Length: 87
Image 1 (tube, rainbow, N blue to C red):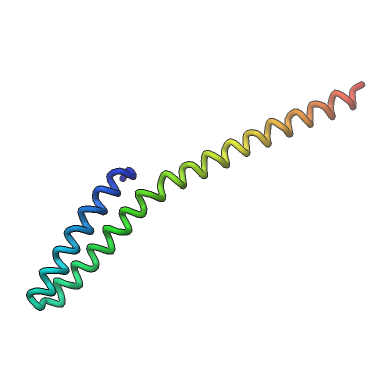
Image 2 (cartoon, rainbow, N blue to C red; image 1 turned 30 degrees about the vertical axis):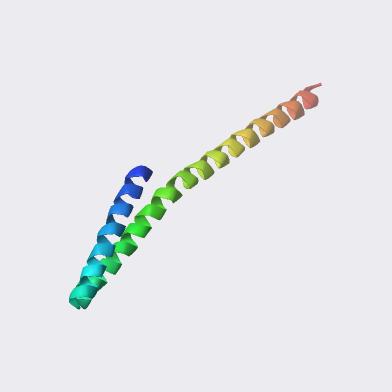
């Protein structure tokens, strides 16, 4: 799922979980209350994963740029060494 989809699904699961938990409390149904708590926790996890995905993508992109820069610098250094050794 995309990060927006995760956030929307998470919010929906949190709301549904709160509702189930409330109905469970009112009716005295411990099972329904527990289902609500579980669904609410699932919703929170989905919302968090929607926030983590873009951060992970940025981190990978940052490392990729660093690696490419390091390769370019090493290439230049090797070329300079080769040119000096031939002259």
